[in-house]
Image (cartoon, rainbow, N blue to C red; front, side, top):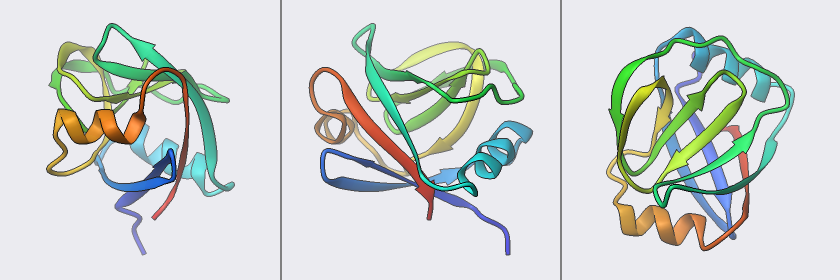
Length: 120
């Protein structure tokens, strides 16, 4: 059975994100097979929450545009969840389908937040 989704839990709410088909997303799934992963995340540039992963993952970077609901691997060792938009050279791990900026802001809340990633 192939895993195609991950869950994100924050502030008592849960969202499901569809995984990308790349080596980085597969390494992220491998990490999550060890159990749920809680990452302390903080705001960055009024567009995303960012936190440190416990280990680096292989990068599949390319110049992409991202938006609300995108889960991104940044520089191999950080994970970000977007509530705004950006263009940069990084790797998309997953995406919450149909997410709006308002929905993602409500999900992530103000200030620092713990986000738990787990296999769906």
